[in-house]
Length: 143
Image (cartoon, rainbow, N blue to C red; front, side, top):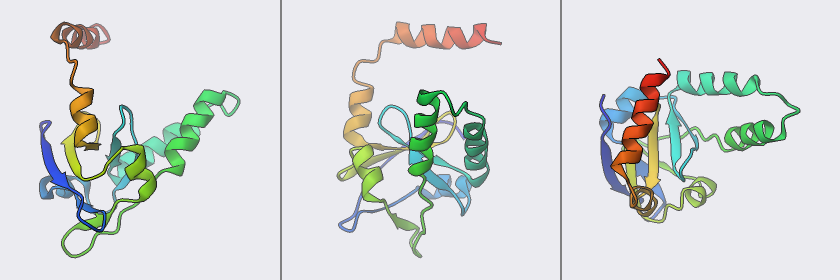
C-alpha cells in the first residue's frame, strides 16, 4: 500500500480508530509505541517481534542504546478495540505525541504512524525539496 494519510479525531473519551484499510493490514494483534519526529509507531505483531529482537542485540553497556531500548519497550501498548474498532489511546502516548484532538494516521515507509495534526504540520512546515532529493539520492548510493 502506498503512503496515505487519514485525518481523524479523538472522541470525548480519548478513543480513536485506525482506518479500516490500515487496520486490515495490521491484523488484530498490533502494538503502538513511541516513534521519531514526535509520532507514534504502530507495528504488526511480526514487526513488533522484529523490533524486540533487534533491541535484544544492543550493547547493555552503551547507555544511549540501553536508554533507547528501555524507552521504546516501556511504552509498548497493545490496543483492545471495541466493536466499532475504537480504542483508548493511553495518556502517556497522547502526551508524548502531543495529541489533543486532531490526528493524522499515516502509512509510513516502515509502519503505520499516528501524529498530532499540529505536530504533523509543523514537521513538514520547512520542507526543502533539495534536501529531500539529497536524502533520496543517498539511498541509491547505499545499494
